[in-house]
Image: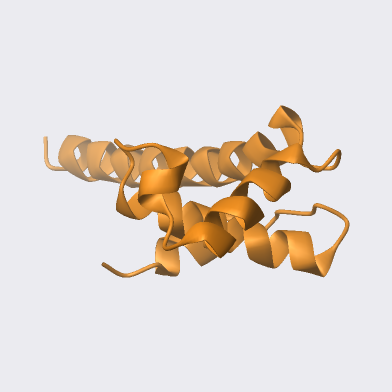
Amino acid sequence: MTTDWIDQELERADLEDDRLNRRFAEVLRSLSRHPNVSIPAACNGHAEIVATYRFFDNPTTTLDTILEPHRHATKQRLAIQYRKSKSKTALTLSHY
């Protein structure tokens, strides 16, 4: 499974620390590979489990700071789809 989407999704992530931003991507990679299991089951070993829990325990990693890059990426995807559908509609209508 490619993780390019993770880099795109987190493009605007700003947890005020490059290490936290990198850890954010790693946590998302681990959890997205196994979204239906617990954090310990999704992680590869004790060190990764501890790092993931420390990431979530960090005061900088609030619900808003974690969700903000996702919100932004979702808005971008919706705007692209809206423009595409609008273009298709315009093309369809121009044939009549």
